[in-house]
Amino acid sequence: MKLSGSPDDVVLPRLLTKVFPLIGQYVLDIINGSLTSAVVPHDFKHAVVQPILKKPGLDPAKFSNLRPISKLPFFSKVLEKVVYEQLLIHLNDHQVMDMFQSGFRKQHGTETALVRVFNDIFLALDSGFHVVMVLLDLSAAFDTVDHNILISKLWTWAGISGSGLDWFRSYFHDRSLRVMLDDYSSETLCLPWGVPQGSILGPLLFCIYILPLGAVFKQHAVSYHLYADDCQIYFSLKPKDSTKPLFDCLHEVKQWLADNFLHLNDSKTEEIVFSPTSVRAAQQPDLNYLSPNVTSVVSNLGIRIDSALKMDAQVNSTVRSCFYHLRRISKLKSILSVRLLQSVIHAFITSRLDY
Image 1 (cartoon, rainbow, N blue to C red):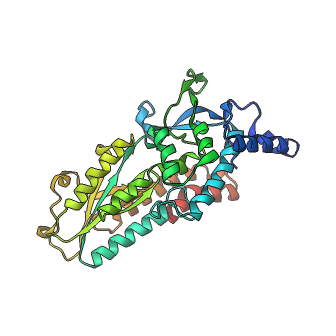
Image 2: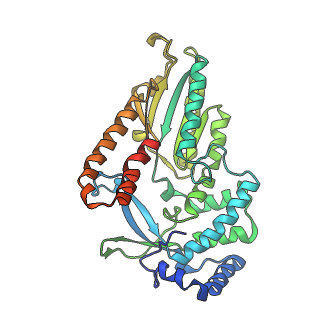
């Protein structure tokens, strides 16, 4: 595990790992006691939230540019890790997770999500279809999860019952947090909703929370791929085909999100149309009310995609970024050893080229 804990930890995680041979049995007793009694210790449920910028260069004075990372006690993360491993085995054995969800899953990532979506688009274009892609943006999705609805989904969709379900009820009951910026701290407040960003269980629980969304897409025969709360939906059609299934799907998705206390950010939702190279502009499909929002370039999981699928926008963006970092690294070259210079080059240049 990463040696990260909470500012409220009495003992630093690094020290705990060194004395673990002496205290390991006591830690085991705490974990087993929590699992058998289906009770999560109260101190394990208090988070210190330290906001970080979502992307470098954003205005830190604008709250929407900040991501609230919850720092939890180190022992609570150990307990969550144990529960996470057991829960994951159960979900995999019973094939509960959505096969088109690439977020926080072993051997899945943004690369596998993008390869799958690109492959589907190329196959559709080669068959003479147009492809309409809509990138849905959810606002603060992790923070608005309703605990009662999530408990219900753990039972009905994931098959968690008995003491296992009671443990999750205890996990969500009476959670609290305080916000810390530099040396300033807020008062402790109750947290009646949301899954903690920065916790081990949070991302997996969110993926379970939105499981029914896949059924909505399948009902309307609309292709989709998820990466946590990033949702890509795409629909293949001929110029004279009706776009009604896509509009009906979007309407139902909005209604489902509203019923489950998730907010679709229309201002950040993007649309793009891919067309076969032989098709004339006059043969473009009629997108009705979506037409004003259609753009020629969209940003999807860190990749800039253009409507011609030539990747010019992505190549240009990568080149600019790499040259920018190369110029900055060149100023440090004289004070870095060869080994450190190689590490820095890999972190800022090679990794971007690989992606």
